[in-house]
Amino acid sequence: MKNIVKSALVAGALAVSSPAFATDIIVVSHGQANDAFWSVVKNGVSLAAEHTGANVDYRAPETFDMVAMSQLIDAAVNQEPDGLVVSIPDGDALGPSIQRAVEAGIPVISMNSGSDVAPGLGVTLHVGQSEYDAGEAAGKKLAEMGGKKAVCVNHEVGNVALDLRCEGFTKGFGGEVSVLPTSNDPAEIEAKVSAALSSDEDVDTVMALGASTAGEPTVAAAKASGRDVNVASFDLSANFLQSIVDGDAAFAIDQQQFLQGYLPVVFLANNAAYGLMPGGNVPSGPNLVTKDKAAQVIDLSAKGIR
Image 1 (cartoon, helix red, strand yellow):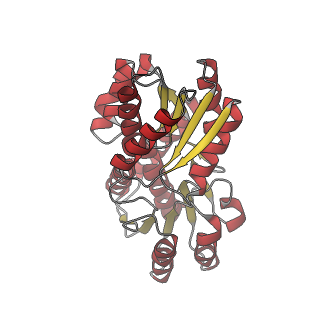
Image 2: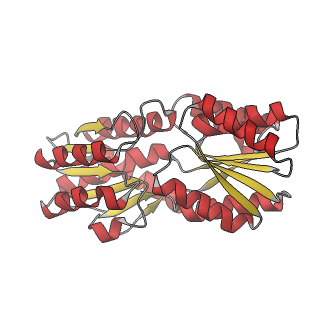
């Protein structure tokens, strides 16, 4: 945590000292339009643009679509920006487009997903968390809370990062785990989690992989079941944090996605101006937000910062 804060402070200091000059940076993410998580990432991107004076363009497909995303990356490369930020939910699908950017001499920073494949694609560094390790930590914590049989809700099938979260969770949990594939429609998620709980009374734990999309409807399903079910989620939302405060959820895993949007833009702007770049990856998470901490960050989550 200290290293993350230190990196943010250094980046902020550099951002303030950066002159306003014509630097063009393009950000391409896989964030779906209805996912509040990515609004926080965009807020970080916007503040970094303000701090550095860079011209920053944020782009994402409307749905989870790797073909569309690779086309967005190709279009960005054709514009020859001073820097490119990408998320990499599927290295096989996006790798060729990212490598074209690298071969064109465009500095590329990955954020959010893709830490495992980024080095092999020539990406300069990654800002994010190890999804597998975060999942494993969550699994261990829920096992310590008495969990024996769990469901891992995957709301974005095909996203390798979410697969890693479930795999890490399974390893850390140690008990029986089944993966429940869904869309990112909260109504569908609530219905499918309700069905999973009603069909197997031994399920005592549910791991969601996104707070607003999956965590909140999972809490609703668990409460409706009338059973004692431990619910946890990756990422934050004001409502899920309130569920933690109220005792309806166990914890959330915060990867600080605001920094995932903010820091890469700051790094690339300073690279264009001064040739400065951190020497390695920046871990923005994971941070476990439990009941004793949840109330402190509800307001910041509602404001689109946490």
